[in-house]
Length: 323
Image 1 (cartoon, rainbow, N blue to C red):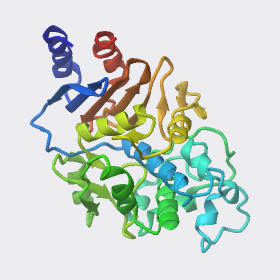
Image 2 (tube, rainbow, N blue to C red):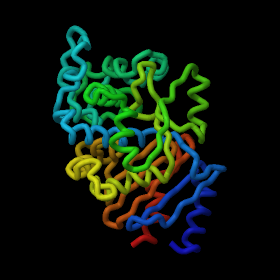
Image 3 (cartoon, one colour):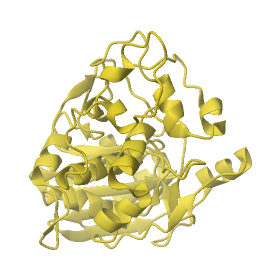
Image 4 (cartoon, rainbow, N blue to C red):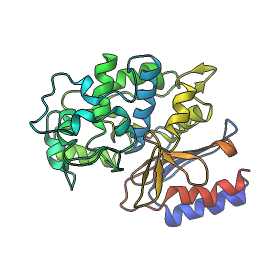
């Protein structure tokens, strides 16, 4: 990308993508662009919302590679033997890990009961309680927050570690990614402050110490780019296989589709219609991977409702100049 192309891109950011705070572009394994906006820098750590889901998907793959989880077809309740299924509940016992990964779990709520979730003492149990009902397993239903935490619960049960501990040992530290600590909230005000923060390094956990799966991770665009490059390298980092090539391939293959928006979905990764795949979080946070162009784009953004589509931004201002 020459200076003229970069100026055109940065002018567009200033005009139409004003909540963007950091971007890193890696081409052929080399960083060709890194910049920060809105007072942020390379030390800033941004809450990337649902990008967290794709990180959790990687951790599920690592646990499978290690034999700690037997199969994505394991029934969810196999990992919660003490959970008492409500009388007449026929759907929940049949829900598999695969169904959560592909967003094809039915839930017992029409509108997400966020207040009850955030004020409950056990977010995994709360999510289990909301699964099932009369819905049909296999139909796409995107669950932004309430539901994915069951995967965190499974990871904790299967590994005997907290999700953050397991992630540090098997993913973050090998990639030289520093995620410092669990983040917990004692009030709604603390939670709101977290959403706006650019200097909190950690991963949100519930009162039981179980890290969130659908949101809650703070990270930099440099570290996000490392995750993207790991997948571009088919699970390898510095000649070490961090996660199996099979899992990378399965995670980024279409398994379900959000028919309303005609969006294909893998294992907590969005699949591009034209090429590539992405981890996407609310407000315009994204890890975009394009194997054809050997390209990774990582963008962090502060939350802004109905933020402009980052895929469109990448297709317009990045892809044409990286053949």
